[in-house]
Image 1 (cartoon, rainbow, N blue to C red):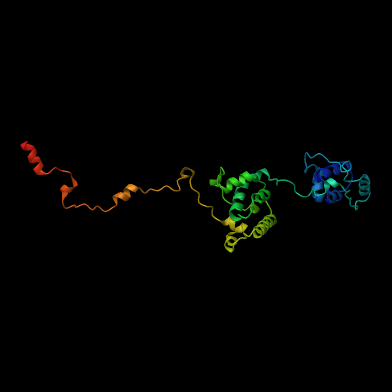
Image 2: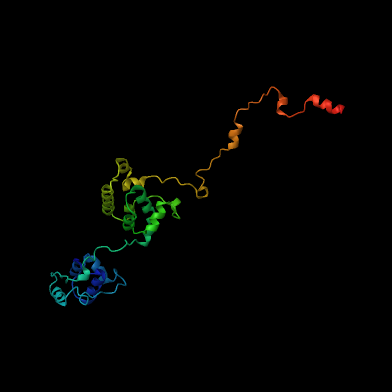
Length: 254
């Protein structure tokens, strides 16, 4: 069961507007700091948030509110509400703020490069992305792959270090069960957040030259010309197909 009401901020707004409970009582009940509740009452915090009635939504009884208003030291008790159970647990894909969404490809690139043991599902859960995006970066077909630099998602604030460590441990355990545990060399290749941030970006091939990796300036004709000439250079006439003198005299007599 959750230790705070669902829609806690909206509940705090309603309690500030409809009761005489102290800021401390509301803060303890909703799981906020007292100053944040004071900001809600002053209109500086939760602007535009519609109040959520905890009594009508079976989270708090009117008797509890009455006791709290009569005694400022009284702590409100949350009524058991089945819908509130597990509310604090994140459900579905991770929400990524708009300001950080442009950093997701760089973090995916980092995870793919330094933690190849992670599955696409684990990466998607860590940074809140989709499997097609991960696949495009793995296969280097992403539209912006030439401009991506690998950056640790922990440094970007897309996930916590504990979440990344847990995902890596889970992936390694699964790999060990399947008989494919990481070698010591593979482990040594893994870098920390501080090291990855200090690494120089990898050199990239200009877009205009993409596809010319196998181009060679060598010419087979040059190889043929380099072969040693075995002809006799002492006799210059051997280079030309000139008729013999005897044949020319016979033609004149005719």
